[in-house]
Image 1 (tube, rainbow, N blue to C red):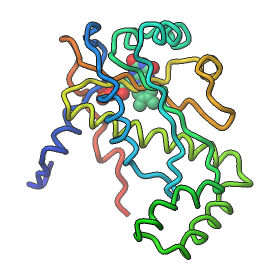
Image 2 (image 1 turned 180 degrees about the vertical axis):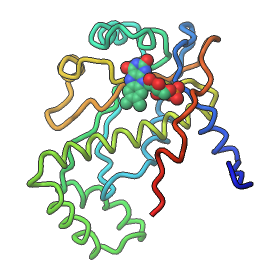
Image 3 (image 1 turned 90 degrees about the vertical axis):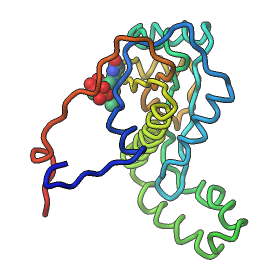
Image 4 (image 1 turned 60 degrees about the vertical axis):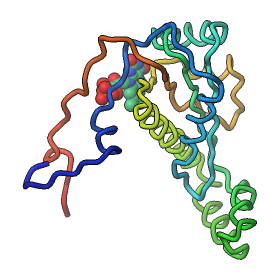
Length: 211
Ligand SMILES: Cc1cc2nc3c(=O)[nH]c(=O)nc-3n(C[C@H](O)[C@H](O)[C@H](O)COP(=O)(O)O)c2cc1C
């Protein structure tokens, strides 16, 4: 950084060195346990009111990839990456708050009387507002995907977030429920050579307003 301030550690190195992968090793696979572990890490990302309003469909067999590819612009990553996640966000629904908080109450982390203090504002924030419910689904899926992207990078795996797909067709083909939004596709897997290094960014002065 400028002004003599340098921030560095392994996490920052991981963030600074990530780029979207174009070329995957098409012969590489991830085990179902590795896929589960990536999703477990992804689901430690924050969600509004601890809603955890997400679901991940791991497209990893040749048959499943063949179903996804034609409805995702035939992007090579879908057939070549070890796995492509359909990252689904679920419309924010305050009625799930007690169930989502129950493990915290049982563990003695959260007092039981606090549960309505989360559920009531969540109800007031979302339940009459479909746009906010959908916005939250997209935010949740995006946070989860971001955590998986950096976890993948730290494990030496490439990743590619993708919005180039037919959302209605993916919804239908992979039987998303009516409260689920396909937020993005996220390809993950070992790379093959030829990928670009991280692209330069807009200057901080153009994107930061200090007030
Ligand atoms: C929401 C989103 C959607 C994207 N969709 C696609 C896509 O459909 N196909 C693709 O090849 N890259 C896609 N990308 C990758 C972007 O092009 C890439 O992130 C951007 O050029 C910056 O490069 P970097 O990720 O290597 O830093 C997407 C990225 C984001 C965040």
